[in-house]
Image 1 (cartoon, rainbow, N blue to C red):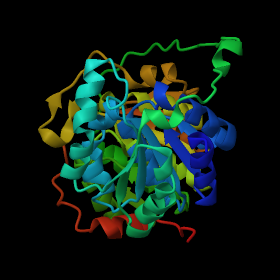
Image 2: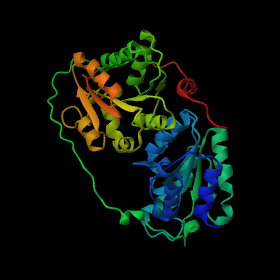
Image 3: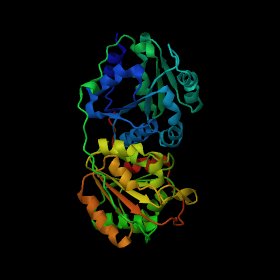
Image 4: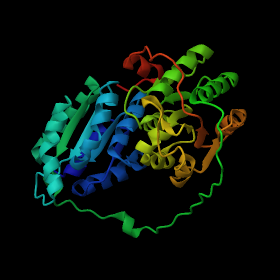
Length: 385
């Protein structure tokens, strides 16, 4: 019995719609097969944590999925595992290529491999060991259990499972070429609004256009709190997913949701958030459908933790970064009188990225009085049994 064939067959039998992965040499035959079976529904990640965000969006959009990472990268997921996956009760089968336990010569892999299982257990995540082919039949039950109980589960795969499987890397047969155009010149001076005013313009625009179908994903902290306050103040009907944790993942979650549904989606992200998860811009530009856009509020500070200055204040420019990451339709605005016209532009182009430069400062609004389940329920679409 070939492990690669068994696992891919099991995923298809379990009606897994999408697979998310980062590479590992020990499971390269499996990942190549997933490319063959899933095509563009095999989403190649920029970072492990990003996969948890995309999976959450897929879940809210009614899809089933599985995540593939290696043990040396599991340390990157535990913040989001607790503050996103377990907070919103998102089911997540995590297939882990367990390095360090079989013919391993790299010391960091050995050290991380020794603690991988205990790290998951410390977070209350069930662990299933698949260390030889006789244990492969455990996998379908473990995946179904994750979705039935709406919880994460770690499925540890030993490298021994894939020994002897043949592999040919298609990258060596490809011609490498790309065209890049990123020239942007601008001089940003004296923005005349804060984030609160910019968000008020966005929500007022949606209401005036009679658009109550666009689903909004609001970044953690004051951005989400201000959106919640404005939605009620302006009587806006758009569904909103409010982030309660996992800073840096709002656009990743929005990406998963836009892939899973045909609904128009706007991620209300921030400059600091994108500093923490810059790679997701590349993933979004590669996989996002036309219905996806990013409204990036750039205040140049860490707004929810005291407005400490970050690199975007006077050095880094997120629009330039987004263009370099593959977004073809980007723009920026820093005067409130020009924002309405830029919102019209967002509504007309495919996959827009709008940088909205604002002054630091938060509106004094209360925390969001909704449970994680209620927040998820505002955007959740029916899942297949």
